[in-house]
Image 1 (cartoon, rainbow, N blue to C red):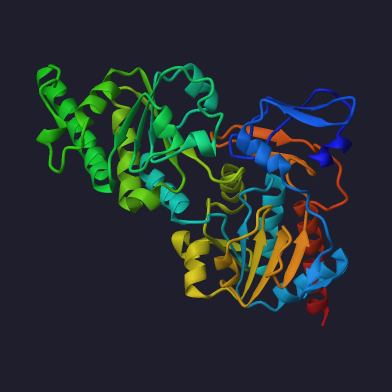
Image 2 (tube, one colour; image 1 turned 135 degrees about the vertical axis):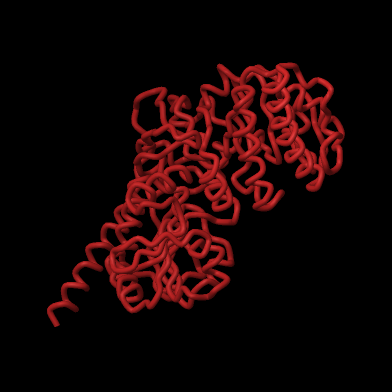
Length: 425
């Protein structure tokens, strides 16, 4: 916390917390007379993020400390010689950094992807068929009267999400969590029961619509148990609550596919679409990293697809799951992998390619490591909250470290100069 002693003298100072994808902008930093920092309205996850030490140290090439210029030059050589480079991470970086990453991918003919598992790709594929019917965090607090938290734990992952919500909360999960303990009702359904309930709900909604259109009577006699599959405990009760609610919000994790698979993701998105024919229903997908929505928006704007892109000879080719980090790691087709992120990559990243470059976090395992300042703390920039609301994070405290945006700008300049030298020869 000592890093914040260099913050501006304005007291209290409002800022955007980049600890999670809620990107809360109503939090404040206070500096007392003894120069001791404290925070107002910051949740426990945000405090853990702010308490992490600032990045320091010199860039490293093959385990040796070097200057930033030398590290950039070596990275340019490595990327210039690569047959198939890949750029990954990005989900906890500002939109400006993400834009520079797309530009670099164009320059070096690289694959680029920000997803860190099958969940994000599964949601994108499912929403291609149903569309994204979502809501803002403010609408959840002010308009919703019924929230279902399905295989998610927002009290731990996004502690302030339900802070201002006063309606009923039902948790559906196969495990006990802080959210299931705090919910008004906890439905302990295993994977098969969750699948059965989703399909049964859709079948009952379609049958209800058919009955109402044919006889204009209410289908109060129709039960979940009338449909195929198992009858999870309290399924009929939950369905009746859904029909009676005025505004339903379904909260799920971005890695929902890990619990219910791709079929479950598709079924749930279609259930939300079907339920909207009866009442207002919105789907709110929780992001693991602070600016996943920004990465999706940036790649769509600049390259025409939200994830899984190959930028060959300046032409963006959408390859979907074939070009995700997970698929490329398995195929071993990447020879130089670039990680851009404030958090260190998993061990799987270093097995992805023959050579690795880390920008934003110091790594002993990377061939080239360039530490950079953190978005929303030592560097500023824009981002998107998980509900799609744009925010702008300012610099909270001073740092001598370059930002990831600055590092990528130097890489772009160096790559352009190398390309000109090659062309002249």
